[in-house]
Length: 112
Image 1 (cartoon, rainbow, N blue to C red):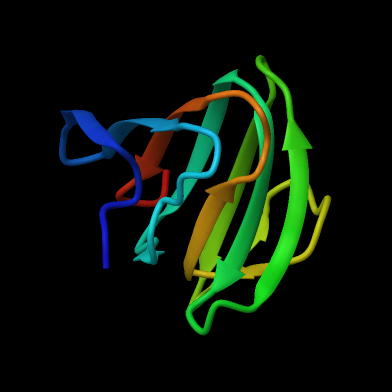
Image 2: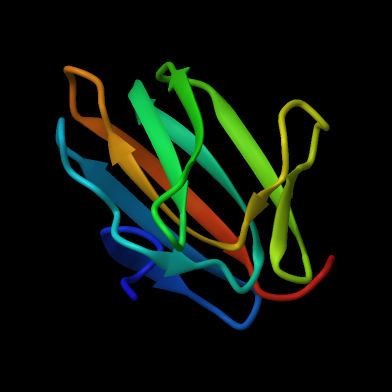
């Protein structure tokens, strides 16, 4: 298992803030989200997510300036806006686009 992003830049008892940089062809590696989170894209690309067995879950293109929020329910992450399917908390993402993907991810350690 790997970390949920490239580098943790801040942590408190309420949140952890991560930066993610994923060059074309690179993968996050298999990781598990233990908290609900949101991410804000600073450089977009096309990503493919896979489950723990390597089965393709989804492919999506996301642009700079977009944000997404996921709520953890047991071992599943649901899009907070209801747009899209739930995914397993343990998964990997690969950049299948032609540009570097960058995001800032905020992990919520406790419910508000």
